[in-house]
Every structure is written in C-alpha cells, then in structure tokens.
Image 1: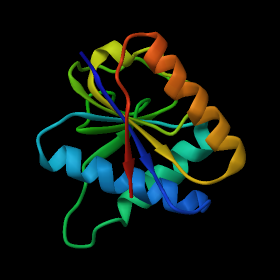
Image 2 (image 1 turned 90 degrees about the vertical axis):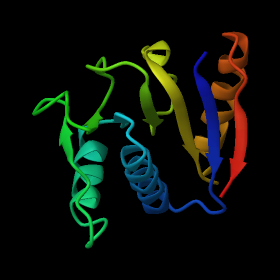
Image 3 (image 1 turned 120 degrees about the vertical axis):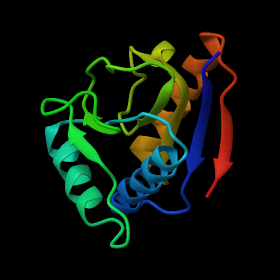
Length: 139
C-alpha cells in the first residue's frame, strides 16, 4: 500500500514549501526513485522548475516539465498521470491526486498558512477514509 506522509513546516512561507519540495525531490532521486512533483498550476510548476535548476550548485537534479519529458527522473506537472509506477509523489496541490495508487510513497508538504492548513487537514481525513494510514512528520 502507498505510504502517505505529511511534512509540516514551522512557518507560512510559500517559498519554503517549494524549497522543501526540491529537497525531497533531490533526496528521492538520489535514492533511485522516480519523482513527480504535483503543482497547483502552471505558474507554480514554473517556479519549481526554476528552483530545481539552481537548487544545488554541486549536483544537477535531472528534471523536466511533464509536457517536455514525462519520463524524466524528476517530473514537474499539475495533475497528469505519471509515466512510471512505484515512485514518489510530492503533492503541492490542495487536493488529493487522482493517481495516488500509482506511487509507492506520497508526501504532502504543509506550512502554517491557514487556508493550506485547512485543506491539508481535509486531505488527511480523506486519506484515512480511503484506507491509507497517513503519518505526520515535523520539519
């Protein structure tokens, strides 16, 4: 069954949330996982793309937008179906992905922004209703 975790950041900084997504994507890729970063929209997708280009000076993180290469090691998209199975989904969206079962692991990144907190709490309940056992991880 898919492992679901909510990584909780201590502040409401939206850029911190995107940086955490980049860190987790780098870590997943370094451990041999295919990574899909699910963004809210194309604007956020472009922001994540830019962050990944300059994220680590000493090591390039191979990534592409879904429209350019859906089979890249790290894929950035909105809600497209992944081209691989058993990878890592990093969900920056405020709703659940309709492709959860295609991943072995899902990470939701939560910060202290009130609207996002409300959405993530609802997602936590929805995961439970669907039979998952979501865990909370404090960052």
